[in-house]
Image 1 (cartoon, rainbow, N blue to C red):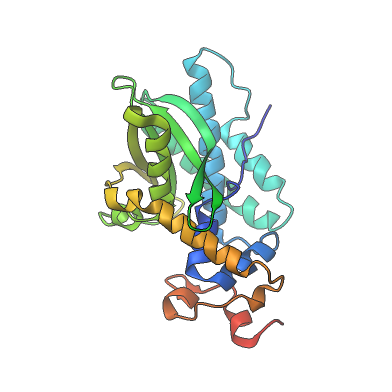
Image 2 (tube, rainbow, N blue to C red):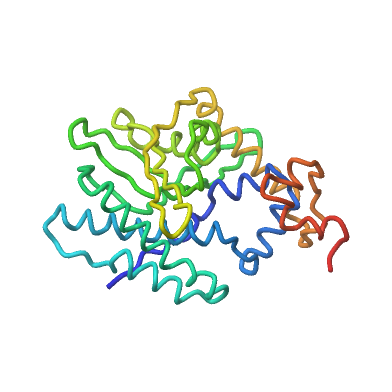
Length: 279
């Protein structure tokens, strides 16, 4: 049996976002990628993504009247948690809750008839920088690619876990580079067969007795932002190349503003380093 645990794409939006947010944050994140602890929210979300990848692998196999070559969603979630080289106990602690959410998800969406085209698929584009005579690789991994059974239009579906689904949810993601990148790649690769991006929202249960909630949201279009998105990628790559001669991340410039150094979730993970220098 196989397991789906692909990790981030090679040159994706998170990398671009960090470079635009703060050059030093980018350099520190790259240098400490393997040792930075994962937050509880990120661990739970990662387990749900793994479970849903295996759920849709089962759906795809069933559509062909074939046996799936992958572990079941429950088995995959437990195995990935068990195999973690660090924070293993944190991962294992969330397994029962994630398995319960995945069971509820299968009951909620079990009757849908989307055709599964691909799962955890990395897409890539070469972005030209004419002024610097450079070509930059940009990649994104799509959680799920599906085809509508009647219209035959193809959609990218992004799984999102949240503590609360609200009317403001789509507004949060409309101008997110992650979703602008999906639209840029989708239109470029699929042309007239491109249907758009959907958010597959999963609301965590409030407690062990409550039920999770599920909904699908079509992401509003952002034609101007999509048309100019390549400029955003170029700007980020120029920032990286302008400073990559320095092997010391702390020598990269810091953004130093309250929106970068302190977020809605608290301080930047490297806040103390920028305040006091290297420990």
